[in-house]
Each structure stands twice: as C-alpha cells, then as structure tokens.
Amino acid sequence: MPLNRWILATLVAFPGAAMSATPVWEQFVEARKTGAEPVLPDYSWAGYMDSEVPIPDVAGPIFDVTKYGAVGDDNVSDQKAIRDAIAAAQEAGGGVVFFPPGKFLMNTFDDDGKPTFITTGNIVLRGSGMAEGGTIVQMVNCFPPDDPDKMYSTPFLITFLPKFENPEQGTFAKVTDDARRETFSVTVDSTARLRVGQRVTLAMQSTDAIPEFLAPHSPDATMTRLVKGGIQVTERHRIAAIEGNTVTFREPLHTNVTSSYGWTLEPYNVAENVGVEDICFMGNWRQRFVHHRTALDDGGWSILELDSLANSWVRRCSFINTNHAINVRSCSQTSILQVIFAGSPGHFAIHARAGYGFLGGLLEDRALMWHGPSMGYQGVGTIYWRCEMGPEQRMDSHSGQPYVTLYDAINGGILKGMGGPLAGMPHHLRYFTFWNFNHRSKVEKAYQFWNPGKKERFVMPIFVGLHGTPVELDAENLQLLESQGRPVEPESLFEAQLALRLGGLPEWVDKERNRWDEIRAMKLPSHPRYP
Image 1: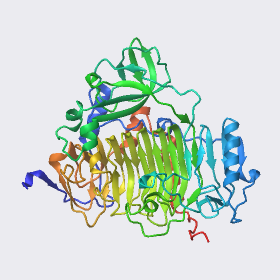
Image 2: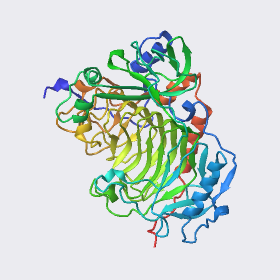
Image 3: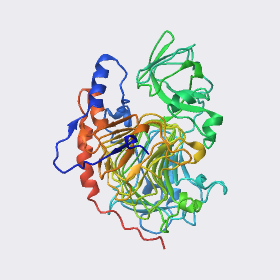
Image 4: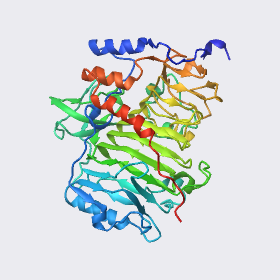
C-alpha cells in the first residue's frame, strides 16, 4: 500500500507537556458567530436537561421498601415488597422508592421468574450507597431468553417502559423543504397537529439516501439491511417554536435534510424524570465469558433497561457480575454518570441506541466487558465522556446506522473488534468524533476504517488529539485528522461546547468531576456467589 495512505503517529504525550490549540475548534467557534456550517457537530445538547442544570435530588414522597415487607440481609426474597413499593409510588403519581443499607434479593427461586416493570415517570430508585456498607440489590437467578432462537432476547431485571392511555399516533407532518445540518428548523406541509413543547421524531427511510449518507463509499452485498431497507433516521426533537409552516426545534439537526427522501414528523411518546441512584446491583455471573456462546453469556444477568424516557438518569451506581448492566433505548437527554462496572467480565456495560443526546460520563469498567462504551441503531448525538477503559478493551459502535457520536477524553482501549452483524454495517455513519482519545494498547499498531468484507467500516470518522501509544491510521478514509500524537486544547470537546453555548461551564460539571475521584476510591462490596 502506498505510504501516503498512512499516517504514522510518532509522538507520545508526556506528563506536563503543553497542549496545543486545534484549528477545528477555532473553526467551530467562528461558525457559531457567523452562522456558517461547522465541521464539528454541536455535541453539547446531551444529558439530563441538556446538561444545563444538575440532576435533581428528589425530596419525595418516600416509599421505603422495608415498609412494604422487605428485610435486608435475611436471604429471603424481597421482590414482592420492592414491587409493592414501586406500585405505591406509581399510584401516588411519583416518588422515591428507597432502599436502606443491606442486601435485597430479587429473582430468587421463590419468585415468578419475570422482570419488574416501571411504567410511569417521576419514579426514582434510591439506595444508601453503591459501595461497601450501602445498598445491594442482588439478582439471584438468571433469566432465559424470551425467544430461545434469539440470544439477545433475554429480559432485564428492572425495565422502565412507560405505558400511555392515549399515546400520540400517526404521522404529524411531511417535511417540504431542505434543511442544513446544525441548524434548527424545518418546513412542513401542516402544523395542525404540532405544538410548542411537543416531542417528535424527525424520521426518514429511503434507499435513495444511501449515496449521500455513505459518500465517498458505496454499500456492498453484505450490507443487506442497508441495501434492502435504505437509510433509516429517527432523530428525536422538542418543538421550541412554530411560525407559519416553519417548525423550530430546541436542539440542532444533526444531519442534512433532503426533502425528496420523504422526511416526516412522527410521534415520540416518552416518560420523564426517572432516576436510579446510590445502589450496587449484583448478579451471579461468575463463568468465563465467551461472546455469543449462549444466551447466558450474552445476557443472563441483565440488570437495568431504560426505554422511551427523557430527562432521566442513572448515577452513583455499581454493577458487579453482570452480563449486560444497562441498556438505553429510545431515550433523549438522559445521563449515566459516576458508574463502576466490576466483577466477572460480561457482554455489555452500557449500550445506547435510537435516542438523541445520551450522555455517559465518568464511568469506569473494571470488569472489562466485551463491548466497551457502546452505541448503535439510529442513535444520534451520543456522548461518552471521561471514561476509563482497559488498554486492550474494545470500543463499540454496534452498527444500525448511528451518527454524530463523540468519544471525549477517553482513557482508552482499542478501536477495532466492534460489534454488530455484517448485515447491519456500516458501524457508523458520518461524524464519529474521537477527541483527545488516549490510546494505550500495546498490541494494536494500525487501524482501517473502511475495510470491505470485514467489520471495520465507518463513514469518514474524525480524530483530533489521538495520543498515547503510536498507531497507524488509514488517513484516506478519515474526514479529519488533527494533532496526531498529542492532546489538544480544549481538553474536553463536550465541556468546551457546553461552556460556549451557555456562556460558561455549569458548576455541576466540576463538582461531579471532583466527586468522581472520591467515588472511585470507595471499596465496592465483595461478590461471592449466592449460596
């Protein structure tokens, strides 16, 4: 292969070395002033309430599980009591389901073998700490898959999935004009069913869109979902204003909208203000993990699922001996912060898909799950921020046409071995941005990003400030490669964009970063098998 197709990183970041400003950041700042199109997406519209305010400390009402019959540390199932406390909170219109210190058991041999569902918003599950001396919720037995032929169909111990008496249905409007990425408005044929504050899905599915979304690449025969079904977009938005037939969203479009592809506004029904905090969730997975060997390996002890939520969170929790700790599906403006994964290696730590503005930050994967920070399947505006990985642990973009993802200031693993079937390729569409990624692998020395017939297929990713152990990158298949071999200023793109948008960095960011050091120093509970 010609040498000019490769960029060899020869510089290593040394402690105390001054970081350089980077032109693409300066271009973003200037574009914000002038209204020009920026190279970088604006990733700051992510996390609980767009990260503008701290996650709230909900006062109550309090529904203490021990008042409903739960007894910690008695080796007797607490599942019915926990469900009764949840039911009472839902009946009251919301509240805090509280767990005092101790171990509380779910899915024992005395239980019904079914997951626990929470079907309304405004419910917070709160324990008394994720570390030793706090609250443990232990999933004693695994779940089998719902469909024996689908290993991925294993349910989760606790699933937040709202039910609506009168959900909005049917197409709201058709988009009639083109719109540019990183702007805020679309023109539609009718606003009769639209209102300010409403959540909608900007949707499109078209085979005609394939050349634009894959350029400069073309699909091959292995990409059967793309070739047959076309490009599929489900970009979630909130309506900020309606003027005539112009609908303005609160957050930016993250893709160009070419009206001839058949864009529409569709319903997006979600619950809000759901939280999980200060709990250690423990499974009984203690075997040697083998990827896709069995449903038990892939998801037997799956713990927490968030589905169709907005402005929700998981924080200050630990997950020990699990196969799939957290699944985030169709959620917007949702944060997972200050979470540690430990114990036996499993399948997923966090996987996020089909939402807008998911923020996973201040995370540490001590278990070294098979898939590291993970997203896919029409996820838009996903951010993983200041995460700790193992040096040889896989990043994961799980195919299914995600776009506009930021891996920001990650102390990282490797950039290959990502998941998703060949039928669902490419791994990622445009604007997959790696910002100040610290590459620590001692094994991987080179990466390709469009490798036909194999699983390394990304549409022109962006690398800024990739540093650490030197690697070769296939520069011909990158949109941008800046400051290779050294970190850049700003250190965190998410923080810098948030500060630029708000006129200063919110206080909660530094507060939680400082608190994260204290949390990481805590001793987690020991994790023997349940007798």
